[in-house]
Length: 393
Ligand code: NDP
Image (tube, rainbow, N blue to C red; front, side, top):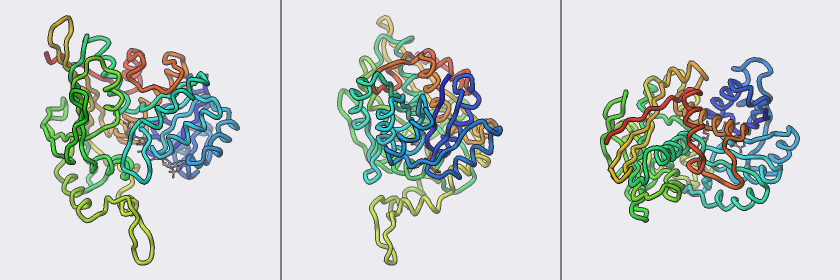
């Protein structure tokens, strides 16, 4: 049906590649390309011989990317490299008339700030070419946006509040490690918090707001308010919304390590002089920390990510909780990655599958909640991410 080009052979790229191979009636040809061929080769070696093709590409270079897309005649691009590469990959897709999908919004390498502005600015260019770009097709953003759209479609006339609740109760046995790219992860959690209420963004200090939430099959966990990118699009697309917040769980050990690292400047992204050399502290820290890809075989426990929505249906108050539970060890047994990469990679494959099958169509740049949630929710159940709904009121 389609030749898929997957860009980025990291933790999420591994899951996407394995899952595309499992969906070979849709992805009849699969090419995995990354900055280093050795990363692609590592993944290819886990799969049956000949299941995928591999290529080297520098995704910061639009001309190089466009040449690759043209040469291999890709029908769709799944971008699971880093958020820094979103714009160059989108430009290469525009140049070659190829549909685009990613899992994280653009972030400038020199500024710890992420927003959709630059990607949304490409809407008209994609529209003029009758092309679709789907943004944020991971878990959060991704499945959480679809949960909101599903709640809106089937449970509410108006949604007034949404809390997105992200719990990773996995234990990898290290005193400190990040479950995905350390630079991206630490930038996200050390930044100021932000939530949206009555039309304005309210800023908080990092980790200032905490609540305890009782996550099904996990138990009560300290959950901290963070800014997270899906809120930027959800405030535009969910009817009647008055407040949206995002909470993520952190254990005390993680927070203490992060606080120390921040206090001594190790989370800095500006260059510093060290023995006559220029180094970026955060990049050096990344070198020291365990590679997130190596956590897979050691991580035990579950993730539980979902949304709680409150609002009105037929004039009556209503509150629902939609959530998905994954087990780190089960994910590893299936695709050699822990649940954080699994829960990101599977929705990326589902988004691409729906685009290839024409079930999700559009001309321009779209966020997940703009699409019909039903086929995606069905695929989550079929592709290894079963979800549940609790009616709380
Ligand atoms: P990794 O760091 O494990 O992998 C990123 C890969 O991108 C690396 O293998 C690297 O290649 C490749 N890469 C980096 N720069 C380039 C470049 N210039 N050209 C080509 N390839 C490049 O990250 P993850 O797999 O953990 O994350 C992938 C994406 O998923 C990120 O954007 C992250 O933000 C997003 N994400 C989204 C989530 C969601 O729920 N929406 C949750 C978690 C992650 P190489 O190995 O060849 O050097």
